[in-house]
Amino acid sequence: MTLGAFNVLVCDQSCDMAHIKIQGLNGSLLMQGPQTHISARLKDFIILNVDPKSFHKKAISIVGDEVFSFSLSLTPNATEGPGYADTSKTDGRLKLSVGCIQMVYLHKFIMSLLNFSNNFQTAKAALSAATAQAAAQAALSVKDFAQKSFRLSMDIKLKAPLIIVPQNSSSQHALVMDLGLITVGNSFSLMPADGCPLPAVLEKMEVQLTQLKLSRTCLDPDSDPAAGGGPGIELLEPVNLQLMVRRNLSATWYKKMVAVEVDGDLKPMKNLGEAGGPENPNPRPEAVGQLGAGPPQPVAETGGEDQEDLENLRFNLNIESLGLVLYSNDPKQPLALQHQQELRLGELALHQLQVSGRIRSSDGLEVTAVLSGCTRTT
Image 1 (cartoon, rainbow, N blue to C red):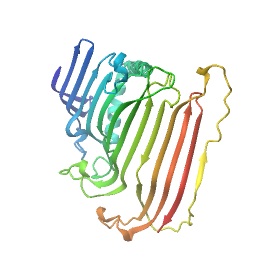
Image 2 (image 1 turned 180 degrees about the horizontal axis):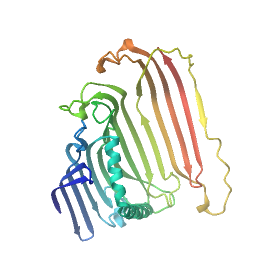
Image 3 (image 1 turned 45 degrees about the vertical axis):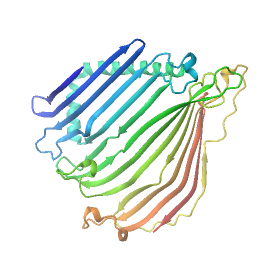
Image 4 (image 1 turned 90 degrees about the vertical axis):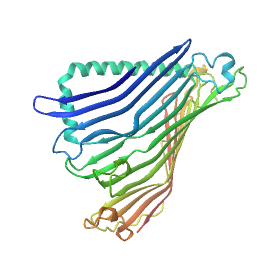
């Protein structure tokens, strides 16, 4: 199936609101015996703000070559029988690539579209009901896959949205939120299980969020907003987060490992703020603290193994440092020079913050937080 392009003009009796353009939609479904192959691709998508008084014409647009590219291959029963012990075999392979979607938030424009959609209450109710039904069916499918130790190989690259929030519809000054790049990859391994004829299947998934940024800038119509849009200053230094997820695909019978284990590592993060003038805060000494949810409640013993209070999820997040730097606000300075060293008032930093916890099958929750140090410098 191929759809070259189509345009939609959103309007009411008084004025035009938005112009929607979609171009280059391709989709295919191929079934070869027990195998199923699905693919889809969208090249371009844009929503134009047709208000002549607005400086920001592209409400939603794409930065890059395509909106998304998706492919899914399903091979039923590929991991049954002799294929169970072959970790290179999977029941499905998913490949997803999503380009950067640039969104300009204009309150007046958003509200006009929401008010326009209120004219279609019947369609909205039907869409909500269909969405709820699809979500319930998807949840059942995911649960069924989990019970069957469904192996899905994933290669996902998401260029997270670039969100621009102008001061108003005619202003070039804006807040730019670049949510970075998200990548997901996984692999499978086997773990011998004592007393069982088959080994347990474990999945290792690595999720990375890189280059999350927050800045204040002056937009230039001839510049690329993805590159900063013009001269600006960082409000949040680039953030990188790495998550390592280990899933026990044989959790229904292999109890020596929790169903899901998550380890997170947040690289040093620094928030850059402004103030109207210097302050004299009270000195804050270095501190070491621990916060816990209290000792776990005793669990009543039961005779059946199915009633055991087991761990469903274990998580651990390590934050190397989290800092807040305060600068004096000098409106006479150019935007690019407002974070000079001589305008710096001070810095508050938290060092080695660790948060860990577990969720049990009885819905019990345990959380522990440890802060190694807190410093303030001027």
